[in-house]
Figure 1: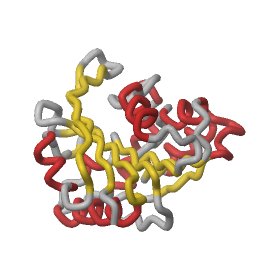
Figure 2 (figure 1 turned 180 degrees about the vertical axis):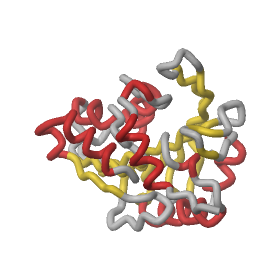
Figure 3 (figure 1 turned 30 degrees about the vertical axis):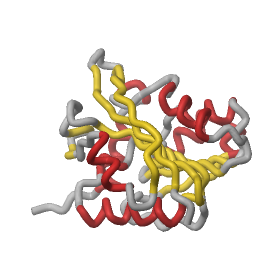
Length: 208
């Protein structure tokens, strides 16, 4: 049985599909922007977008004046596309090509945002690693914003299995190190005129 290669899968997606041909495309990521503006008004805050790919979130954050931005994605092709789109502005962003399942951060972040990567982690080992790195690399009183497929959303995305979450199940994973602020249900309209049901939760890192 052939072993699934996560990186090869995503490199293939980003080299064969255009921006508007993927279900997660958002011209204006309003939910994410609203959370970030509310939780992290300091424009000097250190922010990372995990699974950012060629998302437009970083474009909007630059326009809002945020100055310490990082984007992580497993796909080199996705990062290259985002850099090309941003042009000279790309130099103001730290780009990280890495698999979040094995990523070892070297920084402390004031806000960790992820609406794309966490729900693709389906093994207990990968989920535990994610818990560990958010616990150790989000600053005291910093914030974690997670958007995942809800229990009413799809069970697969881009042809591979995902993990669905509810407010209860997501909160339970992070309660040891984080205080839940709030969770909201979001219906994401895809470019294919369908709806994907998400849950977004915001957490505050408990003071160490």
